[in-house]
Image (cartoon, rainbow over all chains, first blue to last red; front, side, top):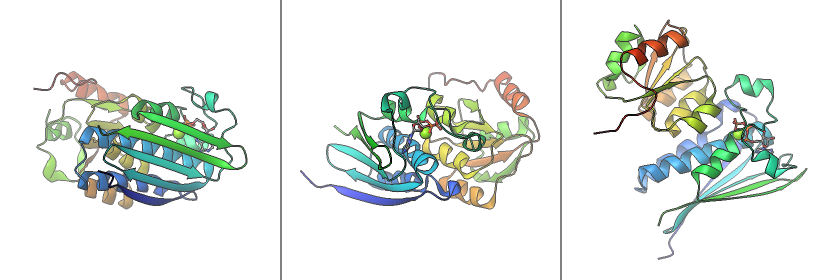
Length: 141
Length: 118
Ligand SMILES: Nc1ncnc2c1ncn2[C@@H]1O[C@H](COP(=O)(O)OP(=O)(O)OP(=O)(O)O)[C@@H](O)[C@H]1O
Ligand SMILES: [Mg+2]
């Protein structure tokens, strides 16, 4: 069967308070689709980390979540500053977050490694001055 | 431990979802860094924190937690309360500080790591 459903969200980069709204909605949609709770938790955490990153590092962007028979795909796309050294950014503890971001409870440099840990595949395409596309997949079968 | 016991031990006030105080929880964690909560916490159903912003609520929702305890008399904003209400999270506030609040719960049997669920 090839039926799939895609949800699209705009992530507002100007307002830290609203960051994560898309992830909350995705969680609701996945529950309505009857997806396994453990899968929902993995997708939610990975997407939430990515959504927060788009707000604190890239000034917002777009998120697409596609649920097919085989997997759930999360695409996070922004036109922010890009990531110069992806290997470095993937290291636990590496962060360029400001003290202000830290005072809000983020910026430990754990987000990207956590996204990789909670998903079955993760691909980062980034160009400095152009933006970043992150694609993550969680298998359903 | 029932959430109502947490409320009593910490002499806490209930901010929302008080009808869920009878629920059982098996472990807890305490942190002001949501990054660390997202990266290190596994099955802990209770979050003690001194940080007050909407991301605290969303972090707990993403992790399927059941209860947030704000320490040092921190009061969540109306927007946070609304988010917690619709997500079915019990929110408590206590005058106690983080170290003391965690110590009280821990010494009364609410561990950091979930023991085998029966
Ligand atoms: N969408 C993005 N655009 C530009 N840079 C990014 C983006 N996402 C991550 N980065 C860069 O990669 C670094 C590491 O990201 P990661 O999510 O692991 O940590 P963090 O966001 O700094 O802290 P934490 O996720 O623990 O709150 C960031 O500090 C930032 O420099
Ligand atoms: Mg991050």
